[in-house]
Amino acid sequence: MMNPNRRKLDGKVALVSAAGRGIGRAIAIGLAEAGASVAVNSYGEETTNNTADAVRAAGSEALPLAGDITDPDTILSTANRAREHFGRIDILVNNVGAGPKEMSEAEHHALGPVAALWDALYDQNLRAAVLMTEAVVPNMIEQGHGKIVQVSSIAGKTSLSDQMLKIFAHPAYGAMKAALCHYTTTLAEVLGPRGINVNAVCPGIVWTDSWKSNAENAVANLPRFRGLDARDWFEGIARGDYPEIFDRTPLRREQTVEDIADAVVFLVSEAARNITGQSLMVDGGMVKS
Amino acid sequence: MNPKILEGKVALVTGGARGIGAGIAEVLARAGAQIAIGDLVGGKHTAYRLADHDELDATLARLSNAGVEPFSIHLDVTQSASCNSALAAVLDHFGRLDILVNNAGIVRSGLVGDLDESDWDQMFAVNSKGLFLMSRAALPALKESQGAIVNIASVAGLQGHAGMSAYCGSKFAAIGITQSFAQEFAGDGIRVNAVCPGFLATAMWLDHLLPASDAEESQEERAARFEAMMNKMVPLGRPQTPDDIGEAVLQLATAPNITGVALPVAGGAIMR
Image 1 (tube, rainbow over the protein chains, first blue to last red):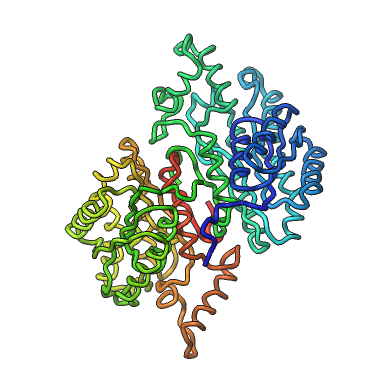
Image 2: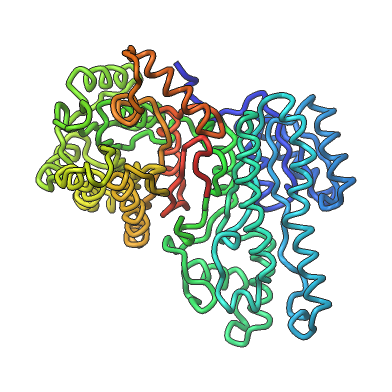
């Protein structure tokens, strides 16, 4: 007779990167609510401590580990400190990732800025997740079990509209997220026989810093949206009001950080013990997979 | 997730008398749902034995032990009249329908030269057309409940195999139907997803797909041989269980912003 609730994570230890706000914070809280202790990483002390407090409020132990998770030394020390404190890491969630900060400039320059953008997006979206995985995997192999989830994106599974790419999302972002999905499959293949599940979650449109800045950018710089409230513009995007920018979400609503956290908690739980190598879309039906 | 997330909800599982369908029903029941089982029970198939009354009774008993009072109805998903009357019976009994799990399916392997046209037709009738007939019957009730459909496709719906053209074709169709329904029903607030089971020690595998052995062997020996084969074929090194499929169905049936996906539960045998 199996455990009637295979979604519980009591006694498990999780490490979540970029968990200071938005999706990462919701994942840390979701894991804590399911019973896991959580090592919380984010760039700043304050955001890290805030999420750690939320983890404790959910009844779990938290270890705040602030630091720049794109830096290899910080990656290694974060993994080591989590392991030293809790004795092991059962669950790794690589939520690290970012869109480009200064895209429009790249259009006016030739190779220099373009190369810099690709490098920056590689560092933030692919390299950071890969290096953290490499830092954690040897011990997972040693202990004979582990769960890894990469937070990818719809942009890793489908092309975006010309308008989206021009204004908001550099092609390198999607390329890196696609690479992350592919890395997920090869890692799952290699680590399956070692008892480790590796999956990815692909969020659709979620009201995070990234979409907030898209929205602020849109209402400030695009003539037809000027004067509109940023949040209202985002809701319009979710409803499909601006199809030239984004028009492929059948459910016609935004996704929430809790939606993403729920998918992650499922994938790292015993309920999903025989799921590995998958990229689960949580996107209101945008990507047909 | 709230362990009783389906409290007050009603689920209909087709092909629920045994195997994967029974496992799905048990997981949904544990999550608090009232369960209706629709099954052909005692139907005839040329390749292997379909579910019988003893198996159905055992499943109903397990569901009762899980704390629900299951309702069972005779259902032939290839007949629209049967789908319509099964649906009416569920509504009559429970008053609502929140989750439709289109799990009924049959398999027959065979090289193209060896497949009878009737085998081909039957597989598409159950595995593909059945989704249409059952979902069409359930649509008004699901609109009202803002419910969800989960289709049980297969990893065979994502990749073709020699000797499996009819089954793979019918399961590819199931995924195409899932994606189309997802888009078509989204405006009505109904989500539609598919789960793609990999390799389970059910009748489909043990009584038909597992290659024949040279020596005489017991059911236990066959099961052990199946397990050893999966150890080599599947990255996670083990077969999947009906519970695994049930948990994936529960996840997709309750996730408010997931629609149109086909999620493999296959130990990594297929990755996407």
